[in-house]
Length: 188
Image (cartoon, rainbow, N blue to C red; front, side, top):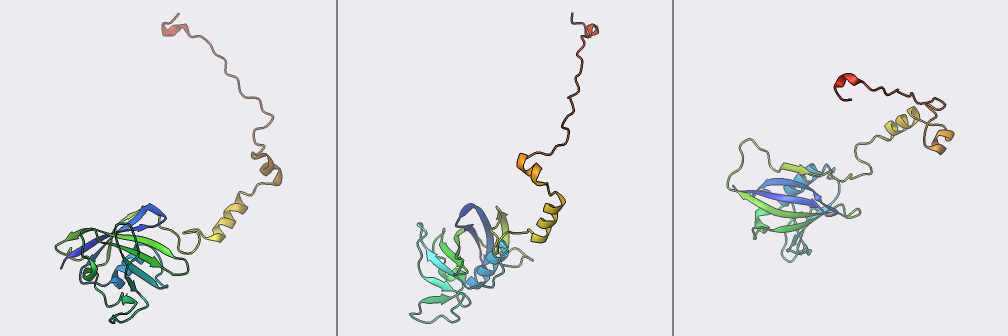
C-alpha cells in the first residue's frame, strides 16, 4: 500500500512544521492523531479538515464530529474517510482546524508518495519536526512553581532593581598594570 507524506505547517509560522507519513488506506482520523502527536496537543477537542486549493481556500469539510458518511451531509466523517480517497493531485492541500474555540489552524500539503510502507514503522509516523510547536495551553514546558523558586533565589532588593546593577565591586580602584619595555625581544 502507498504511503502518503504530508507537511503540516502551523498557520502563524510557516517555519514550524511537521512531516507526517500515513498509509493510504488510513483515515483522516489517523492523520488527525499524527498531527496531535507531532505538535504535542492532547487531542481532546473536535477538529476538521477542509479540502483546499493552491490559495488555501476552505472546501468540503471532513469532521471529527460526524460519525457516518451520508449523502448530501454537510461534512464527511474523519472516522470513515480514507485519506487516499480525497487525494487527487500531486500537491493536494487541506486546511486543518483543531479546537473550534481556539481555532488552531494548520496547512496540510502532500509532499510525497512512497510505493511501499517501511517495515516495522507504525503509521501515522512523524518523520520530521521543524520549529518549536505552539503551546496548546499557555507556556510550554515551564512549571510556574519553578519560576517562583528562581525568582526568590535571585531576588534583588528594590535598590538594586532601581539601578539595574548590584553594588559589588564599588569603591575599589582598578588595578593598574605597569607597562615596561622589554628590550630582549629584539625590538629597540
